[in-house]
Amino acid sequence: MKQNSYLSMNRIFLLVKRDILSKKLALLVVTGAIFAGVYLSSLINIYSSAPSATLYFSLFTNILFISGFIITSIQFKELHKKETAQNYLLIPASTFEKFLSRLMLSTIGFAVLVLVGLTLISFTVEGLNSLIFGRHSILFSPFSKEVFLVIAHYFVAQSIFFLGAIYFRKYNFIKTINSIFIFLFALAILGVVFARIVYHDIFNGFISVDSRNVPLYLHSLPIGSDKISVFVQAVKTIYWIIPAPLFWTISYFRLKETEVKNAL
Amino acid sequence: MITIEKLNFGYKKKKLFKDLSLDLNHGSIYGLLGKNGAGKTTFLKILAGLIFPESGAVSVLGFTPAERNPDFLKELFFLPEEYTLPGIKLGEYKKIYAPFYPDFDDERFWELTSGFELPEESKLSSFSYGQKKKFLLSFGIASNSKILLLDEPTNGLDIPTKTRFRKIVASSQSKERIIIISTHQVRDVEHLIDPVIILDDGRVIFNETMERVADVLSVKKVSSLSDEPDILYSESEIDGYKVVVTNRDKDQSAIDFETLFNTVISNPDGIQSAFNGGSLNETK
Figure 1 (cartoon, each protein chain N blue to C red):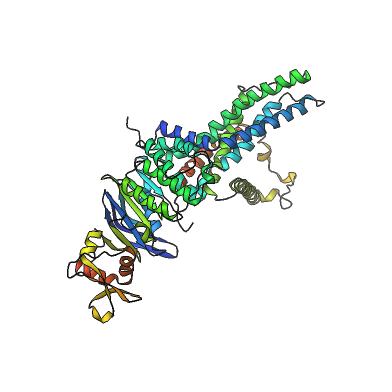
Figure 2 (cartoon, chains in turn purple, blue):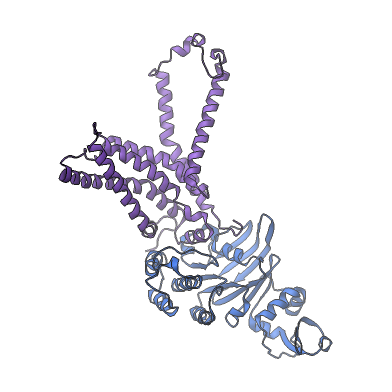
């Protein structure tokens, strides 16, 4: 049967298999380290004066975000070295398949791996704790609404690191973090400048406000008012809809335009 | 079939190809020769879709390489001069990469790797430079891709392996396949490549079969350069001179690649006149 030139599930499967098999040792080491870390956290938790009921939820969030961002940042490591880039780009699969396989691995794939892994680890660790110490922490609950909300937030934030992975040639993780901080700092400065210009009457210092000068109409906009709610809702909608598709799309085109020049 | 029309490409500081045009057909082992920096590797990378031309049209098997279509990529194998192999065994590599090539020949792969005496239990990353090259060559040939691009394939190979390399490449040629070997070690590919393409100054300055070379050019030994009129190229030797002249007597004297290369590079205008009476067969 003739395969589609741009999207073939078989080729995506082969790409994913390639990534997993060629990094199986690293995966085993990371899994072992996570298991040890979880076990230690659980031991500390059960012997603390106030054991946390949400230990595994906190661990899930931390593992997903920290490990996920690091793993995402090295997704395109082989593209930034001439010798490995040519090998990757010449694998008989379309750019879209290569993009999709890496995106799936670092989003859904990683989230499911942490979800299933942590569930299994929590059962193992707490089972051992019960047997050895006669006490245990509350087990991880993978099907709660909070867990899925954390995963959704991870997908949005991951898209920035995915772009950083393909955009930066070295130190992708650190450079992406720096870029985020610089962007947020610039946004804060912009906000202050905007407020200083529009509401210059109410300021009595560089950023300090004299409450006596704040006009009445600003007092009449308490948090929870209709106008504020609409604004918050709009920001939320933009947050969920725009960044991830935008950064993923830019990443795709960046991959498509990658060349392996001699004068790199 | 490879067709290149008015290809232009350059790096920031250097223009490499200026309106380069060339047609390459199935069933031949082309030798791509040129001085260092002539653009041989860049040319192969453009054919592989690893570098995009600034302007002009490049068509390989009817595909535009820059699009990196999987149907094109499965018909192309590029053996680069510099490469890194993963820390896995050769059998594992085959298991991971061979399914991407529908016509991959398992039997041929094992035959070649055992012929090259490559250790099955060692990791590819621990192989020597020459062993890595042998491994990639084995994989490329077993892939049965229609286009095989070999960039300096004999670099790092010992003398017995160079001989074996020539035999393997020659036996791998078929009517459907185009093999392009880029090299500056012309002696290593003697009696293997035909036709010969020579790149210089951003253009194809020579593209001829060895049969035609033998028809047009002749190599002679003379004691004095004045003994022979219309010398295209000369080299001093202990007992006189080796000269390349136009083959007016139609005798078939063998011209080695090194002498041919030196003649073409040192006297492109003279060669042009000798082959085409003033119009060099640059493009077709």
